[in-house]
Image (cartoon, rainbow, N blue to C red; front, side):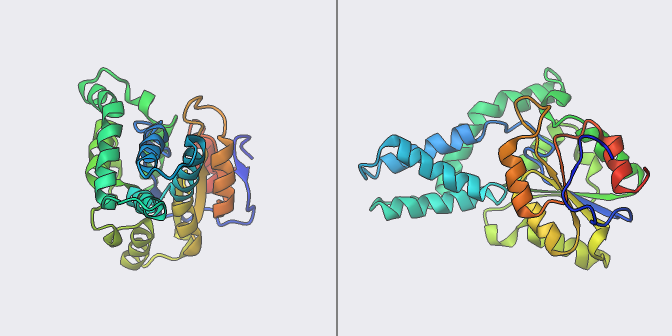
Length: 272
């Protein structure tokens, strides 16, 4: 058994995978690392404007709680919650799409140089991906596993950032992301479509993600869920918060990164 694999459900299906679903931010891409440090302060500013009289620390705790709870879903859901929190405090809220635009503008100022550096070749794409990501994608494609990318980040950004990382070509099943009409997209919808269009049966799908959504949705249809609990700063150890959340979501396996992707593939396809 590979040492870096934490197997939570030893009886989970192995082998026979035809399709694989990947989350993007935090699972493959590190371009948006630190996004919480942009979203939460922005939300605290908005809540302070309601003049509710609450201490800044209390507002930070409130925002952090629901941001973390909704991480993995489309960004709009965090903004919908922000609108509700403003209204609870008697404030006049903006449309959630406007809050999302403000957040994206601020985040872009933080990550613009990363995307530009990747496109210009000034930043090594390996510095902006979870270690071993491309090796795993390559290994799965060699096995003729069809790969899908599904992210809660807006589609236009996911497509651009995946291209900047040079990884778009691996996803023969397509790159999927959030839309302004948020009800028309979800990871659940993508997973159900994979099953319907390909006459898939339970354990023929394996999913990789660092958020609870893709893990829960995959387990619901009988697929195998690999939780990627990467410490996005150190890139070596498991992030304890991610690990706890992934276990709660029902992950079959937890890994810290893809550095040992050959061992991971051998385990998943029963080649020990």
